[in-house]
Length: 323
Image (tube, rainbow, N blue to C red; front, side, top):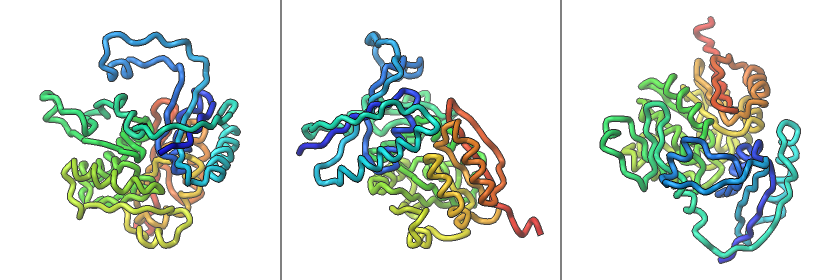
């Protein structure tokens, strides 16, 4: 089988947010090429003695993605260009030239595994399913993760920001809703922290298999969670299925512009006094999300940072307590 390959020229400054945007549009798997120097953490995870020489960072990044021939190429590319134009108002997205080529069916879905190795989020060890736990780590909280073709390994700063806030607010009674659940990592960790039940939603059908597989390998029974496909923002049937006023925590690790649309809707899913944890927010978009949260009638509790990314945590007013 042949695939249509698209190579998008952008900037290293924008590569993370553009990559997330492509994922949100349902594009499965994005390859990133840049000349950004490796961090010490990157070097340690490569497990090689001699690293190749890398040219100086020129600020240019190439993002490659693949579409099947039967997909609506014109619509998808139009959506990508529209999002890029919107992003250009707050981040340098570069030339945004898109080159098209055709490639043979290779195992590009799994090639990224060679770069994903075990790592820590504070005292939590997150380890891919194809690696073994070292003896010295057996007494730690260990999370086995294999995102498959769904987004979410836990390595990205936005996910780590969410993890810390979920841990902070989870109780044994917690019911959590993870909007844009991807691999299921946030709901899974909430359950590991002691939550009672997790519901995940996503636009990508791959999220269902990925979530079920990751929950199973981490010993979480099926009666503790569910995952469904659909758009909470504008699909009433999905909103009804998710339920109203029944979540102690709602987490959404997605783009800031999507959070602006989601927030006034998701208020209905939260219990009075419920916690709303948002991330996926580039620092330039912090105030945009804070304003959206306040406009929806939520109280901002905490704003946390990691690198250039932001997490905004808020609470839905508890009418009973106010009375």
